[in-house]
Each structure stands twice: as structure tokens, then as C-alpha cells.
Length: 163
Length: 338
Length: 123
Image (cartoon, rainbow over all chains, first blue to last red):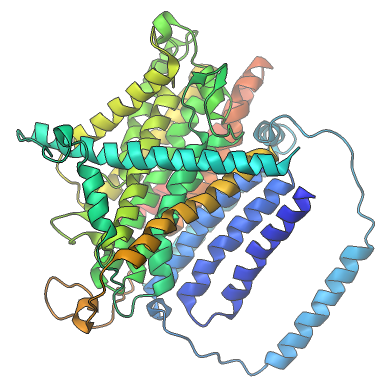
């Protein structure tokens, strides 16, 4: 029962700011609302017993990506906080497509027979992830470093070209 | 499990920690800072209010409580108020994982989260956002610039902070603060096993241990915006940087957040490298406080010893100095452990 | 484990309330002598002019960018650091060390690239 209450609270904490992010005319306010949203997702990860991922979520999303987004927004025209004009004439079509997509996704989610795997959780989340990284998924581990390198180089190339 | 009972316990713990931070962190910390600064500068610090000036900070707080509530025009009211709150809450949350020492048969810590250290670094990241928003919301060019510079500085020093944390994590094999302190128990006079001296079976680790301690302390000083890294709030340059438009109690809240974070960093340094509550003779909690205050004293001492670093010097020190050094230390620790 | 995080949530709520309390006290106690000049932004005594946003300067963005990527890398190293000694006990120490060495070298090259391309310069 407690978990259900926690889930509902966390869902509200995640979704309400998310709505603000999408609809707000004030760019900085929108970027700011990302943070409670990310923290809500952290809570949801915790409910799923994924502590390590929750920790990463705080550190990377709320701590790094939100900072990056705020930096960028504050450095541009939108950074003054003035309301932006919404120039979007296809709101009706967009709304219909979004609604259809939601119905399709919900139908899919509710009809899939999700397998329930039994078993005990590892004693330490981080140790389990570490162990997996270094044995079963070592290739993914090394390739992820390459992916990070590529994204770093790519982002720098793009950023410098803008200069 | 009785959720309601646990919530009550959590509320009490939160109030206790908050009071501790307000009294020890802010009041005592500010008082110590002023007294020690005065001593270093051959002058007396606060003297009049209360015995030896001990009540000075209380007087200041009462004064701040009755200052007029000024919000600059065109400032984003919501963000303007949220920023100092966020700074205080992030600093408060960082104290959840700090272990005070053994008491009543168990370790006195709010909660020993399994990913304790990761959580702490995450809270340090949240303070960056609070400062950025504070600087932006004031609608003041100087505050905005100060906010950016402070945020750039703080994010640049988070990488060395995290890398330096990896060294004791590798030596202990756990991210839990209690686990790391427990791994430093025993040894010669209760001191020999501290991670700053490496591991008992592997004394070569004193090199990365000590260097990681230095890197961590440097990065921690930068994270709390203290001299020599306090350019963002340089008193003589940007007025008060991102603080400029914050007056009265909001200013006090930012300061509370900063001092709480500084004490948390000092406490964590002692947990990671100086054996937490281990030490010869005296009970654990006493040692914890001794170490924490010794490190805070060291921070204050450094403040009046070194000149302020220019922003580009500061960033170079981090990215071109401490980050490569951090990686090397992690690798050396790994090499020596194998 | 869930209990730990319940404490975190409660701490956050209590923290917000306790921090907002002084602000409420101020709102009740403080004098109100408001006039427009008092709300002007502070520019060292000069009448403020111009919009209060900084010129777009790419160096802030570059720092944040490099920070995000290296933060992710350090995150990858955390699980490795935690299980390192366990693997040593299982005689796999050298192997695991080389894995991390490779990882760090690849990202070290990224740092060198950023350094050479001037992304880490402030001016």
C-alpha cells in the first residue's frame, strides 16, 4: 500500500513538471521543470529496486544534462525568460496523432503477457552491475567508451563550426 | 513494516540534522571562520555579543530576519525563491550518509544508503543548479555572469572529486560510507589503516592514497566556492557574484547551504581518507568531530594563505591538471592492488 | 533499501519546509517601505541599462558538454571500482585492470582531443 502511494506521488512529481516543460512559453521555466521530473524518475527507479540507476539518474540527468540545457537556454534569446510565441498551426493534427499513439501504446502494453521472472535480487546493486560489466557485457563496456569518444568529438566539431 | 512510524522517525531525524547544521555548521562555522580569520590577521574577531563573541551569529541571524524582503523588479519570482531553498535542501540531503561514529552499539548515521557516495556527489551536482538559477533569476548582468562562472567552476571540479572518491572505493570495495570507514578499522594505534596511508598489506598505496586525498580536498574547496576558488563570489570583483541581488534571509539561506556543504565535504574527507571515527583512545564520535573541525580549520587557514585563482587558471588546474591526475591515480591504484 | 530512500524523500520535504520557515518569518516581521528605486537591479550605483543576458559565448557550452561526457565516463568506472577487489580474489585482477585501462585510454584520447582543439580554453 505504501508503495502504491509512493508510486502515485512520484508519478505526479514526474508528469506534472513534464507537462510544464512541454507547454510553457517561458523557456527557462520549462528547463527548470525538467529537474523535478528527473528526480521523480529517480524515485521510480528506486521503487524498481534499481538503486545504482537511480544514483546515476540524479548525477547525470539532474546534475549534468539539466545544467547543460540550462546553460544553453540562458545563453540564447530565450534566456531572458520572455514568453515565446507559439507558431504551430497543426495543433489539431498533432493532438490526434498523439492520442492515437497513446491508445496504440496502451493497448500494446496491456495485452503483452509480461513474463515474471522470479529470483532474489543481488545483495549489492552496484556490485552486480560491475560484475556484469566486466564479465558478460565487457564488449558493451568497451564499445560504450568508443561511443562516448565519438559523441565528444562530434559535439566539439559541431560546436566549433558554429563559431 | 510500519510506514507511518518510519516517516515520523525520518521527520525527527531531518529536524535533528537541520538543527545540527544550523547550529554547528552555520553558527559555529561562521563564528569560527571570523575568529580564526581574525587570529590569522592579528586582530580579534567578534568579542562583544555573548561570552567571547559566541552569540555573534545569533545576533546576525536575528538581524537578517527583520531585513526588508526585496525582490528586484523583473526578477523571476518563483526561481528567485526556489534557488536558495534548493541549495539548502541539497546540502541537507548530503548529510544523510555521513556516519558520526559508534553510539549505543550501532553506527550513528541517518541512513547508510548502499550507493552513499554516488548519492553525495549527486547532491553536490544539484547545488550547481541552485546557483545557476540564483544567478539567472536576479535579472542582473553581474549576477548572471557570476552564476555562470560559478557553475562552470563547480562542474569542472566535480570530475576530479568523483575520481578521487574512486580510490578509497577501490580500496574498500563498497560505496557505502559506513563500509568504507569499517574497512579502515584496526591498524597501528587506530591510525595505521587509514586509506590515506594505503592498505596494510600494500603500503605502496600510500602514494595514490595521499594524492587522492589532496585532489579530493582541492576539488571539495572548489565545490564550495572557497578561496582560492571563490572567484564567483569574489568580494572585491563581482560585488558578490550570483549573490548580488539576494538580501536578508535568502542570502542567509545560501550561506547556510554553503557552510553545510563545506562541513559535509570535510566530514566526507575524513570518512574516505582519515578513518572516519577510528582513532586511538577517545570515543569514535569525538574523533569524528575532531577530524571534521581540523579540516574546516584547514580550509579557513587556506583561505587566508593563498591568493585567489583567476577563472581560467582555475579551470586549467581542473581539466589539465586534476582530471588527468585523477585518472592516473585510479589506474595506479588498480595496478598496485593487482 | 526502500526505507533509505523514504528517508531521502522525507528529508527533502522537511528541508524545504524548514528553509521556507525563515522566509515566512521575514514576510511577517520585516518592514515594508517599498518604492521603485529600491527594486532596481544593482550595477554599482549606475543606472542599469540593457537586457540582462550575457552575450552568447560558446565556451560555457563547451565546458558543460565536456563535463557531461566525462561525468558519464566516471560513472562507468564506479561499478568497476566496487568489484575490483572481488575480481582480484578470483584471480581475474589483471584482466579487469586491462579492461579499465582500455576504457580510460580511449577517453583520455577524447580529453587530449578537446585540449588540442581548444575546447578547454577560457579565452
